[in-house]
Amino acid sequence: MHKKIITPVRQETASFDKDWLNIDGLAEVEITSEDAAHPIESALLPGHASGWRAAGPGKQTIRLLFDSPLRIRRIWLNFVETHTERTQEYVLRWSPDGGQSFREIVRQQWNFNPQGATSETEHHHVELLAVTVLELNIIPDISGGNALASLAQLRLA
Image (cartoon, rainbow, N blue to C red; front, side, top):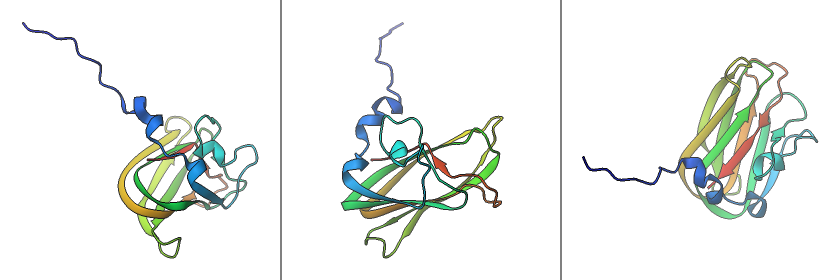
């Protein structure tokens, strides 16, 4: 028998942080609302644990306006809901022309349930060239309830 000790395979999360873009230095952020205790910076910048939360119920928009057109290859989203059972929908869109037109990347629904499904993590592999605007629309409860939209983390590479 031949054997050889090999280096363990690095998990994707091992190099996770170093590849992400510094959104703070690349974009202006527009939001429809925010809870003062959970500002948008908490979802976009590393080192913040609380994430972003809307100030009131209903559809919310987070829009990143890039200073210069960017190439985006990965979009990582993390949503957490530990209190309310609900079905959330989000739509991720991008624009190559400063928001004059948008192209949809993904539209997805997720059922949150405090007894089990409390977190949704999506890692979208894309090939987007010359992105000037990236927009995330969140409908926190498609049944029209009073749930608040939230976003634990958004990362781009």
